[in-house]
Image 1 (cartoon, helix red, strand yellow):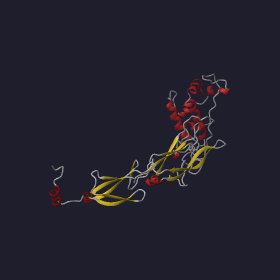
Image 2: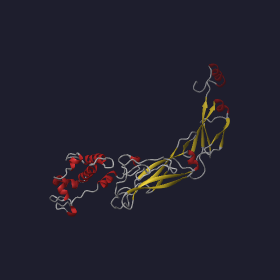
Image 3: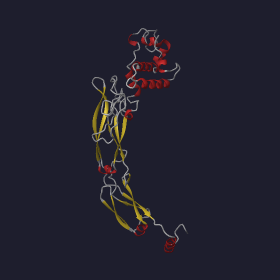
Length: 346
């Protein structure tokens, strides 16, 4: 008597396609031999994969439902869609379990290693299964270690053309200071990718990519390295895209090409005017003076902001924060006598 693929996956014969996928995922992750060290795990893993390959294919499932395993593999009468009951070239031969597993998960680590940046056969950082973005060598991310199945067990995917296929894009933030964005910067980023070697085994390859940030770059600027990511079964190698993120600054807030800052003052400064200096983003002293504070409570100082793409610099916008003193009732009355009751009191 042949195998009952429904029973292997714990399914009923009227199960839906989505039920088959869920059952395979659950059982394959449970019995994968690199995660399950039981003596029969490898055999169960192969049976689970074989069952999924049959039941997820409408034609193979139809043959199995009518003729069972023997009908698929050539032991029973002829079935539809090219399946021969007499065996030979048209008989069903199950694929390797690892190939099915790799195809199902699309080259990603189902066990959560490296946050989706490693391939499905991840391991410890620095080894063949390390995370994509390794530590050291000026890498600002620290080490992102892989968490997959230990030593690589995969085989190279069957040769197929990936021409015209769009590569997956893996994004990673690069945090820089506002000063870096003002002056320009140079970053070296080490990327460890998964590749197939000449023998068809999965291994890793490390490369340092360099980003030359230009003065005036904004948060959200993207730098893409084509094909710098993992090689995936039946797909082009991933593109790695670094996205610039601006760290919060203690003094300045950027809006476009302008820089905004707050300047505290007493009410006497607002009334009578003032002259002071502030330190600009370039470290230079910027004079700030007013005969009296503007009604808008801000002062725009041209050419002291961020570099513009077309040349020149944006403005430094100084926002005045007036500190009002606590007054006694007598002092308030004196002010009213001197300046009137005010607009709202009328």
